[in-house]
Amino acid sequence: MKCLDIVFCDTRCAERCSEASIQDRCLKYCGICCEKCNCVPSGTYGNKDECPCYRDMKNSKGKGKCP
Image 1 (cartoon, one colour):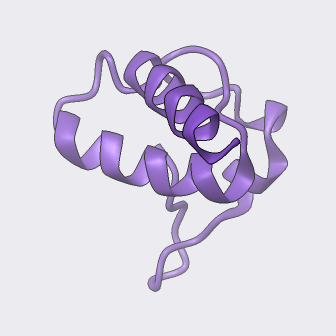
Image 2 (cartoon, one colour; image 1 turned 120 degrees about the vertical axis):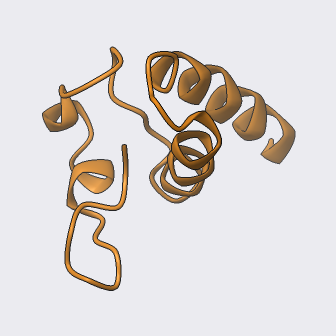
């Protein structure tokens, strides 16, 4: 099952980060968020209400962690 989760996250994060200016950072944080939440919002930006866990994750500075 874990292997399928990684494929799911890689695919969804590649789509989510396709227009990001810093691709590697976007893919890294999207992957972390996806693995924890098992969800990535659709599109390249916004739509975070589709996945409250992804939307609500914060970094150490209290800002949104997930791209």
